[in-house]
Length: 171
Image 1 (cartoon, rainbow, N blue to C red):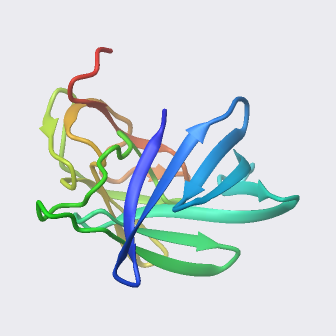
Image 2 (tube, rainbow, N blue to C red):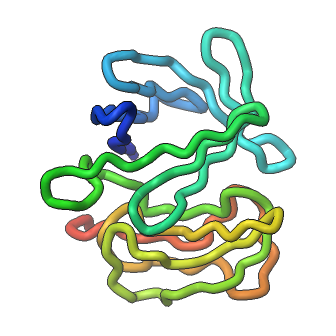
Image 3 (cartoon, rainbow, N blue to C red):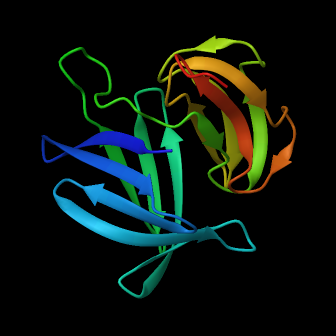
């Protein structure tokens, strides 16, 4: 599944697109730059990706309800601000319907159940890890197809907490 996001960098919109390229391979476009990336989960649940022969460990977590994202690579964290389009929402659409635990932690709340309809940016669950709350927000509008955790559950990084079937797609 292709993932598309737009972020603001220095006040300018930067589009990020990730397309599967077979196996563990992906083609990632950041603006005009194209990267061939191999990615996989490590036994500890971290995301390992290789670009140009160098391997990095990473974690990606949606934050808030406005489409912002935390990205942590090799111990350094960036907050990517969602680009706000003319309609007043996050531009670019095409977010993911799969909401995973950003790191090993405890589920504090699940605000949806299978069959519920959700909107882009709606907080569907909250996971706490390392004394921080991570709000998992819907990246797509659609119907909740699966809830994979309950309040109080301990989940590993990458565990699917909520899966949303995007509106207009046939299961």
